[in-house]
Length: 170
Image 1 (cartoon, rainbow, N blue to C red):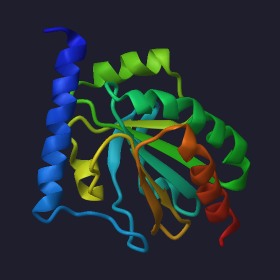
Image 2 (image 1 turned 30 degrees about the vertical axis):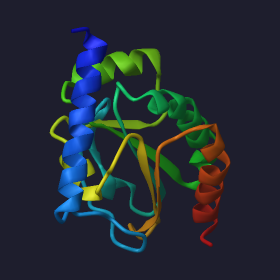
Image 3 (image 1 turned 135 degrees about the vertical axis):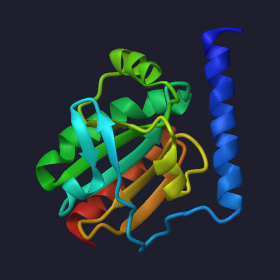
Image 4 (image 1 turned 90 degrees about the horizontal axis):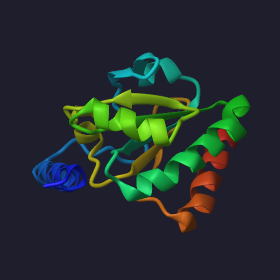
């Protein structure tokens, strides 16, 4: 079995577990609810959602085996650069069981935003993540403004518009 196949199976298994967890009363986060805080190790030290209080935060859950996640990284880099001065903070939470898989992905897909690692998958479970990538826009008050499952070229405009609207406080 190749590494890609093992990662694909592990990813499918994680997605299956997340779906089961959500169907039996997971902690799905809905629009208007307070986003669960988290404290995770990251590429540059400890990452806490609460450290971004007062900013608009784009939280993205991703995995190294996820094709759409590869497509989202350049876009998230662009959003972070374009809107950093207006108060946007992008935090990408990796859910690979092996952090080394995530680090290999990052070597090929560098990030200009904060990256955290959650190999146990507790944070996506708290958020009710149903697939990869999944993203949440969190307001300055710590409440969820919107959520999105998946990523493709057609999503870029709407997601950027949601970010701009959040930054404008509308």
